[in-house]
Image (cartoon, rainbow over all chains, first blue to last red; front, side, top):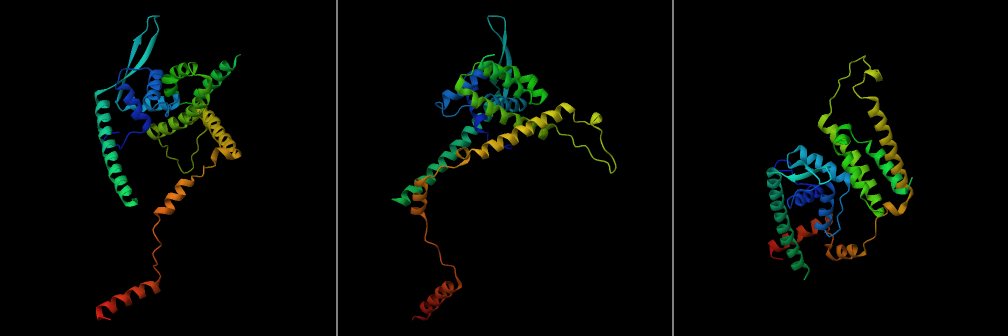
Length: 113
Length: 153
């Protein structure tokens, strides 16, 4: 998930992106991912918590307990500074990919005209 | 029991297949998410969680597997096995689920038949280069042409 570990999975990228906005609980992350992609990519609980487990273990995501008004507590997840760093790195990598694709597709379009 | 109640019960059973550590940590939250789900989201929840079960076991095996070296004449009685009986039962249920799922998918052709994309065929036919003749005769013919040019014929 960094330079040594290769690119992030789509689900991990969307989760980090959701948490870059604010701290969220599981349901909030699912809703945020749905909004980010206009509903075209939905993340289920299995994918969400499998990814959260990995991201927590790698220190890219942190967790905290938030006390609700009714006395219950809810676990919320947040982006750590390392997570932010990895997210920025991933965005840079994706920008490079997009630049390469544009260059190649441009050449293909020229060839077909 | 309502349909929602039945689905939640089935979902709790599915969560039981997760490794214990994962289950202790996330199962309550996953049930909360399932409780908030709409009727149309249940297929996604079940399929996604089933894949998640397999993935988490693979992850557990990758991260925390300890290889027990087998002695030449040694055997491990089930009671002394480092693999608890509970895990064996979970593995059996999981395997049965995967086999039944695979049987179901193979019995419904519309699930695995890939759609035909006529546009892709048209594009690839348009972009296809003419096949290069690499036969010995063609190469010899090419070579003769070169020698003719060199000789000024």
